[in-house]
Every structure is written in C-alpha cells, then in structure tokens.
Image (cartoon, rainbow, N blue to C red; front, top):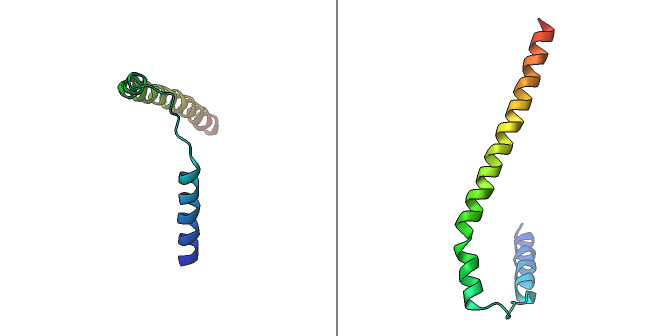
Length: 71
C-alpha cells in the first residue's frame, strides 16, 4: 500500500511540474473570470435541478404505469 501511495504522489507531482501557465492573460481578464464564477455556478446548479426534476418525473410516471399494469 505504501508503494502505491508513493507512486500516486510521484505521478501527481510530475503532472503538476509539467503544467505550463498561460502568461498572455491580463489581470483584468483574470478578475473578470473570477467574478463570473458565482453566476456560472448558479446557472449550472439550476440546470442540474431542472434535469433532475425531469428525470424524476419520467421515472415516476413509468413506475406508475408498471404498478397499474400489475393491478
């Protein structure tokens, strides 16, 4: 188990050291990207809730059909 942990951390370290930073982003672009995160999270969460509601509606209606067919 210890060897697996060591290999995991070595692999993780090698990936982080080979990553290149994009230097052509300005401070204003960075600030705008950070400022837009809450809106993106809200939009994503709203979309996930709607997809879940649609899925539940579909599955529940199918289960009602199955119950009525058995009766």
